[in-house]
Image (cartoon, rainbow, N blue to C red):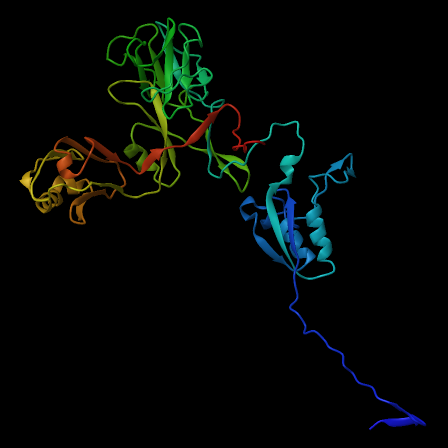
Length: 428
């Protein structure tokens, strides 16, 4: 009941306050821009949040220390030791995140896919990021081993090294797998080597045209370990004959090749010895990434060599297409030189006869049926597998007469006198 505090006066207190229920806390989201691949706080590793692949990833950061570990310390553009206020290359967003975490303990931070370091002025031409494992053929250090016969002795011959992309500069467009020097380049009697194609090719200028060494119209040409005493046909040497020396000693062919390591940021040397075939290279070089130079030994005698890389595979496999008729097969073909001539036999009978061939088994080749109408040939020693078809290729599921497979492949690389750079984005 009310309490009388004075005659005729009563006081009543009613609490009618209303309170909203507590809401879930919210966290700020900060989108920042920094340089790419910055060092973390220790300076010994890359701050993970600045790796280009992590752009756009939301990081929940709970402290200033964690922020600096993830995105590095805020950088500010300076001139003469003084910070340039408002510079677009300064990392104000990262500083704002750092200051916020000084008074709070959680924030989401996203780094935009923008590299502020690319916005800075430079007296050096900008370069893109080089992909890990990129191969560089340093043509300034390679020796191409060309010698010509003077009439009395072999003399090391000067050679022009061309690295222009085919169809540009001093190199013509590719035709038949080769790109010759432009006829406006060089003088009669000059030699040149084109390094910008898969086949590194030697040319001699006759009159006003460049001719592939070993081709019709060129001087006699051959590859040889040491100085030959006869020409490629076994006849006496004549003045002007040429050869490429394969022995490194004595200014022979020596390919300067290196591979880029993105961790160290350096190119490391890669050995590229010279062999005639994949199988010979396989004897001493059978690891993923091994490289060798294979020079031409074909009857055409053309003067070229090409770089080959090991795929890491341990077997070579050739699989046929669908055999159109599994009940009657007639063909004439060889597998690793072993001849088979099925005449109206079934697919199963053909496979059984190949499996039972002792000479082929000795060459580590096996064959098996795949599905209902295909054959798979496997060479288990990692050497090259060859199937040559004289007739009836369609009957056994093939479209080509010559079918080869190797654990080696053509090497993808760039040939240049100066160190290569990465691809620069359009508009840089």
